[in-house]
Image 1 (cartoon, rainbow, N blue to C red):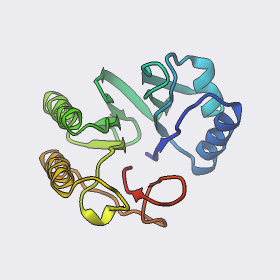
Image 2: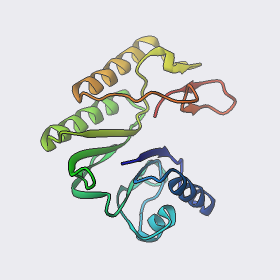
Image 3: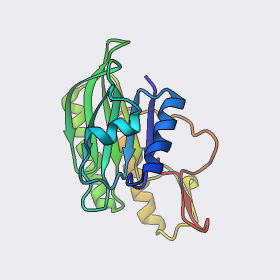
Image 4: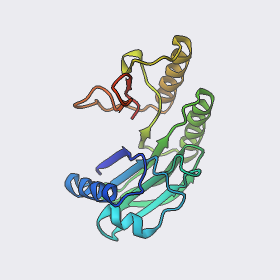
Length: 202
């Protein structure tokens, strides 16, 4: 199953919807995990416009005003959802990958910037994973966190604060026994305008 995760930084324009649709079709995506939709409400029309057909199912977390928002869309016949959970910074789904007859958990994350809120988010996802006890787990999204100092440059954050956040994030990855796929192409996934700072956050 091909899963694509993408921080869209707003889904308000038809240009962005069309660009996403072209990406889904080009990469033959089976499941799309979007962060920062900035949408308080998601409907079938929006999902069909992104997917390119009505052969999709979806679940979402509404934005708070124009901040945040998470959307998961998947191909009908590829993934069968059994249950879902919407948390403070994530949408989690337990379901079955139909071709492999494999039950799995999928978590779409849009983490806050605040270190305390992030710590709470890692704990909530961990608790959800313990409850579902899926043999296979995919956690993707915008984590707003780095694993080591080489994944950030130009930041003014204090070293001790940064070290604590890295330790928390690495512990979260260790606790869930996650394996991070290698980054291909660019070194970073986020750039401040002007290029003065960059990080690997996704």
